[in-house]
Length: 464
Image (tube, rainbow, N blue to C red; front, side, top):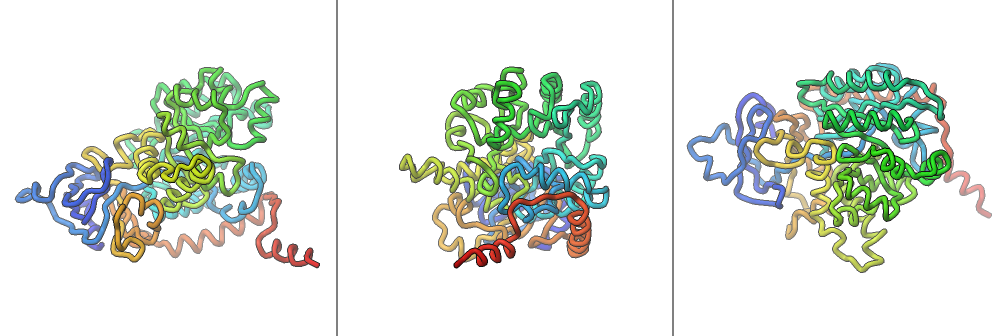
């Protein structure tokens, strides 16, 4: 779509075969984009005589970019190092790796993750914060250069291994600086984070929650993800992690709870009644979790939910499929629920639900006047979608990343057929190969499960 390359320089009217609106797929509509925003959506005939540059998109779907409600953009060098590993891999892989990453490594890893996200159809990600010691501006600059929108978390832990490493005053000084330093930035939106509740004292948990609430930004934390974390909290405080936040009054609409896979009935009620949001991360559950979040139940009860990758696989269409499949296998089959959400629910959760969860409701995840022009042009003339009877279900079960022809963020074309339009992707991959080898060789990473080749050899040697 070469006609899209300069769309940021003028007002354009995009005229696709189909448009995905908040209430479903529609035909015969045009979408006007100007200065990075969607300014009008309506029947194509209604633009006659006053239309800007018209960009026909035959056999294409114009849809909002997806929202990844939980990501770790600096961890992309780990990738397949964590396949087959037991839970809490952050202790043996992520933390050791990030602590050995210098400014160059963080920059390249972040750019690679941002590109992967865009290729997979995500135009917005919520990053839960890095444990690297370099400045946050390196992460922000890399993300913005690639063209991804990011709700960027700053970690506000005051404890490490149960010992104080920062005072409350120091934590809040860092947090306030993070909240103001991105004022006016087009693509970076601040957020505060505490890695897991046990990484903060009661006093700091309450203070950071209150600051997030006052600033109206998400407060991100990994919550009730693994049995080990739940049990540690019970031993240390007598309360499960989510119960502890509730007892402290540190739970409300500002909370973005990543995972929330291990929930008791009273915790489900607490999430619903508090207005907190949950990032449902089904691929993470499949790869390293102890359970699957009861996303369909939470949704029916009116809880706020988005979909997150947890940095596992930045492919939005495969995430939709995983979200539906996980609910079908864990709840739908036993109840005879063949619909398991009706298809549209997972699409909505990956779009408007994610936007709401990360604090950008009405601005991303939907095509409507006043929203950012963060858009995907998706090919429909592919065997997977011919014939097409129910496009919303088809996007959940049949669509794939290769169909994403153009990725637009803030009204600017960022990727064309998966490749960047204004920077050298091949050069980035070459740098990533070299730097990741250096980091992997130096960091004290400890794997439990062997790589596939060694696993096969061990299995063969054990056979009679």
